[in-house]
Length: 449
Picture: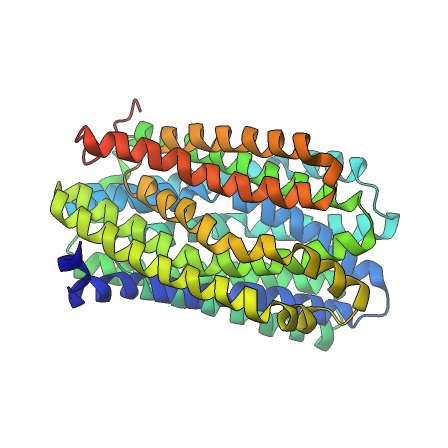
């Protein structure tokens, strides 16, 4: 372990993959702030409400399909480690085919789904109208948005993190610029915000395909037209892995949705305080996601090369820096939490309420880092079944804790969320330890896994 930590090249590899993804993640909340600021300057609150509701529907839909990136990263990284150029090319073609098929289904069936969801919503008629307007435009960006998942995953799998970084940064900057132009300049209101996002998605896809073509040529991969005829070869493995990661993501989303809706029953100040603290949690996610992405790419590469020593080095190096980042975040939240809360909200009642629950957030980085890292490890190993099962158990643990402690109100929700994160890490750690000791973790998961 000490020898690995003294290896400067190891730290360089970790940071070369992690830091670009952390930097690109910063543009995500920036886009949200600009969206809110631009729409929030219109003359009625229902415009902002419509974009918020419609945007949430789109984001949840696309987020649940994020398995396209994760599965592509793991499979491609293993092919890269094994120097299998045919598999690298095939993974990209299969991933793009699946992404565009899913996008087509979303476009075809979006209207009845939207009608059902908005019918169940308790929002005002104006908010519903603008939310549906926003959603019906944004859905046409699905082919590009889902393709971008595959492009990012494939580039990461080939150990290239700089290109995905620029893809995200450029996409979000284009979105921000067009937001201002269409909404404030042309007066297109909610439609302008939606069109800006669609154009940004397609701009990102074109840039991403250019990055892929450069990587393709540099690695002398087979021509794409040669792989089109065999697109079904290996598709079973990709579909099963995607299925398992989708179910895992669905369980994860259910816990966050429950926390949001249950918190809403505890009063306006609690809802606002939770929103402030959830912004802290997103900061943890953005920081840790970068290292999880690095872990996916490095673990997949080592498994593809069937190199146990290299895999051990990557595990040590990435875990070391994840612990350092987690300690920094915990220290920051513990010492400067009051000041950060003050920057987000200037309402005394909300600040006071948020401070009551801040200790839960201060513990989050050190508890949650393990589930982020282990997610990266299992994605790189393409072991989706284990991720699915452990997430289901963790979700059950979340609801059990909340049920036992629900008389404590919001403390019960945060205790359940912290326990949920801990159980995610513990479950995967137990599985990983067993498979490592049995010397079976290094073998790529089969299609029947």
